[in-house]
Amino acid sequence: MPKHFRTIDAARKTLSAIENSAIDELLAGRIGRREFLRHGSVLGLSLPFLGGIASAVGLGASQARAEGKPGGTVRAGIAVPGGAIDPVTFYDSGSYQLVFQTAEFLCVTQPDLTLKPVLAESWSPNADGSVWTFKLRKGVKFHNGEAFKADDVVATFDRLADPSGTSNALSVFKGLLSKGGTRKVDDHTVEFHLDAPNGSFPYSVSIDNYNAVILPASYKGDYEKTFEGTGPFRLESYTPKVGASFVRNPDYWGEKALPDRLEFKFYGDVQPRILALQAGEVDVLDAIPLDVSQVVLGNPDITVLRVASTAHRQLHMRCDMAPFTDKRVRQALALCIDRSQLVDGLCRGMAATGNDSPFAPAFPVTDKTVAQRTRDIAKAKQLMEAAGLANGFDMTLTTLRYSDIPGYAQLFQNFAKEIGARISLNIEDQDKYYGKAVFGQSDWLDSPLGITDYAHRSVPNVFLKSPLVSDGPWNAAHFKNTTYDGMVTGYLRALDLDSQRKAASDIQKLLLDETPVIFSYFPDLLVPVRKNVSGVPPIAAGLLLDRVSVS
Image (cartoon, rainbow, N blue to C red; front, side):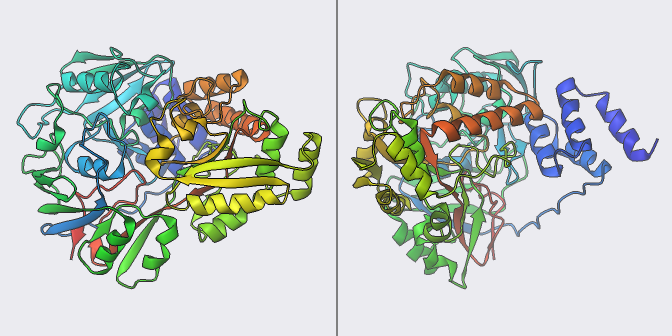
């Protein structure tokens, strides 16, 4: 037996059936190195172990990134945090960019969507994925000197999953994890007993779910006073509406941060941020909108990190209101859109084309053999006529003033004219558009036609559930389809790649037929840094600055 086969055979004897199925997929050539590492890491297998298996079958390792020089101050320009910062309730980039420097997750996503252990050393599911066991890292302390233990993990997720509270993470945990479902086994082991089996649960306790930073069990709020956490930086100062600074944590459990200090400056709009970067007042920005990217893309002093993303704009049509009760009308509007104009024109080529489901090209399970919907005005007009709307209809599209969305709305208005749909635009400030984010009190959830921004996720679970299942809290389309609901349940339960791919394909085809929501494009995230800055990880979740160096 060749040596590499002996290596794989020895490894197989230590693995469960579901873990071995990932090796079967690799050996059969159905997945490559990247997807093997991603799927194996979700199941809790270590990245070095997975890399060894991939190398044994001739798929070499990726090159390590060069390490920067320690010392100095990294200056970042970010949006003003949206109110008092509380990791349990925050939802805005300005807040979580700060918290990411001082508090940590059980695991974090990497640029290739693999999961890297942080406060958890390892994890594994039971046979059906209804219970996930996490082994916690030992020797970790919070900044206040308290030891990190299982009690802190239990308290953190009980807070986030409490239906009587105001946790922003309920959008992830509703129907997945209930208060009381996180249980201590011993000081360094916890079990997550889920409401329903889930094949990709670790992403729900990773940086993908940005509220899921681990806080002390004693946490009572007033986070801004301490920015308590286990992270590589500690709070130096925080001034609301102005800025914040952090210093290297000398007692950090892991590799010490490279910068001595981080300095964050807050800006009310993106234009002042860009001017500050151009002037050298800051070294790095959080992600900037596509519509202002040209300002920095041609600047010789600035590098723009372009990160493939699953972020998108959902164009919903209320399936319980005429004329959108007829799926032929919804299909007609989807067919009138020139997606190439959106990708190449509106997004300047920095986007991937959408096919009217949340399954972005970046997701490994997306079935790319499903025929891409393209512009077909003749067919769209036929559908409108068959629906009794040969003369078109009048409708208001309500959306928010953010990034490329107003431009998208105007282009959609022009596309729709060609099939007789007369669309007027109502573009609102974000606060008015989202309202209280509950049905009956939100232009987002109540408007018959609207466009909404959705942030990046490493797995499509939230996209599949919250805006599309019958009882989803973000179901602006008011789409109710029991077949779809069942398909999503099956997809979420699946532990093996083959089952996930089949379920994904079925969902893609159903949504193409029903078209409650149009997914036209998935824009890249653009993170600008000055040329003398290195080490910013190209991940879509946010800024992690502990390995950043400024020369």
